[in-house]
Image 1 (tube, rainbow, N blue to C red):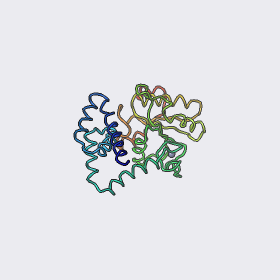
Image 2 (image 1 turned 60 degrees about the horizontal axis):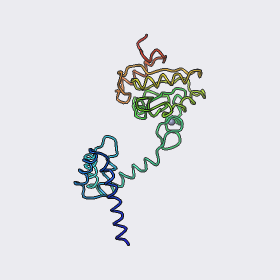
Image 3 (image 1 turned 135 degrees about the vertical axis):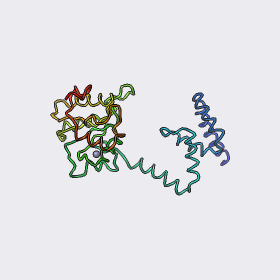
Image 4 (image 1 turned 180 degrees about the vertical axis):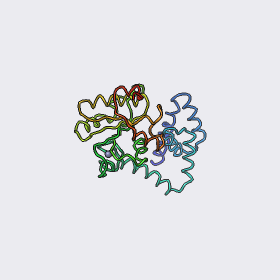
Length: 245
Ligand SMILES: [Zn+2]
C-alpha cells in the first residue's frame, strides 16, 4: 500500500540521519543542530550534500541551501544541470592530463605551440596560472599532485609514468619543472630527473623568482613570467641550493 511504502521511506531516511548522529561528539552536536533546526528531510539531505564540499561547514551549507530554496526551480535546475553536465563531459587529456571535453585538450591539439617543450605542473590551477600570463607557448604535463610521503602520495599516485613515456618516445626536447618551491616539489623534481636519465632530454627548472614555500598558482604574473625567462638547468645540486651560480 502507498501509505506503508511512504512510511518505509521516511523510516529509511530517519535511519540515515541517525547514522551520522552516532559518529562522535562533534558530529553529534552538528546533527543536533541540523535535526532541531531543519524541518524538512529534503532540506537536510541537500545540506548533507552541500556540507560534503571542502571548506563548507554545516552552518554554511544550510545558509546556501536556504538561498537555493529562494531561487526559482528553473534557476536551481540550471545550477544542478551544469554540475552534472560538467562531471559527465569533462575528463583528463590523454596526453597531458589537462582537463578537456574530448580525448585530447586544446593545448595539445593547437598547432603552433612548441610541441617539444613541456612544462611539468602539479595541478590544473598551476597550468591556468601559467596560461594566464600568455607567455608560455609550449605544452604541459599535469602530474595531479606532488610526491609527499607524509600524505601518503607516492610516484604511483601521480601521472608520472605517462610523462616518462613522453620523454622516452623522444617527442620532448626540454622538460621544464614548474613545480612548487616546497620540499615536496623539490622531491618530485629530483625523482623525475632520475627517471629521465638516459633519455637525453634537457631538464630545466623555472627560476626561483617565486618565493620559497609559495605555491605557483598564487604567484603574480610578473613573477611567473620572470621565473620562466630565467629558468636554469636542473641538477641534483639545485635541489638544496639554487644560488650556486
Ligand atoms: Zn593535453
